[in-house]
Length: 392
Image (tube, rainbow, N blue to C red; front, side, top):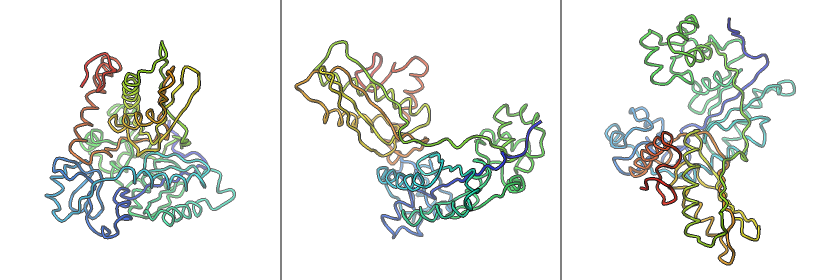
């Protein structure tokens, strides 16, 4: 019923920067090497954004309250995060990959897939991938792990097995034996709820899942369960989606009458930014570049952009938009149109900004606002005076 053979000739490499935030901090401060390091806020009510392997040995993990992390490891070094610096290093790695790889997907700020299919006709593709990994390490100083196999799922799992700072090749035809002894939790797509259901069924290892009839899995877990069953057999036809820094989302607004009311224009820009940021969160993306456009009554059009630390938060984006507008605005001319564009989009729902309790509160607020606006209509509730509903 199901084709258990991987697509003939396909080669996929997965690259993942190890404890990325911590690694960047250690480049800035080598005295942190070998110490249990926690990236997070200074307040006990903040949460852990990332932590070193040394800290993980104490049971510390991402999203854990800092207060609990302090209790588990009183000697840990707590460092406030620097998103601008993390974004800069992420772009350094992206540039190295883009310069060399035929097709690559930037899955998140610290994770990449490369499609090397066909390369083995001309080169030793595995050797090439290893050399690329070594080049990233040499030029950035960051540790990075690599998995090499026939598709994205097996390559990603191989990377997990290679960590920290290692590399692993799963040769064609050995996908099922490689996966069999591993916990089912290692399969991408197995969340906490599905893991609990599988555990209650007595499924602990991927080998057990491989032996179960697909109809039983589909009946128990639905279509998502069938997808996980396929991945347990090493089947994953999903493509490496070519990454393009130019992909973007944007919004424009033309005024019924040309205006010089810059206060009203900035209020409108704030509302537009809120809506675009909501769209970012809805599709699990972050932006790394903001562009503002102004068209005057003379039809002269000017734009300005700024590279920023990856984010999806209104309160970080609105000041950037306003600052760009202020640099563009010519008080001698009336404005006909304004526009905003977010580009350099990457996948991500990282709680990157949760370095302080106040940031955590903001994230909770965004979730509440997004829920209300999704249910009752866009921008029913917002933080600015530009919305026609409740302002906060």
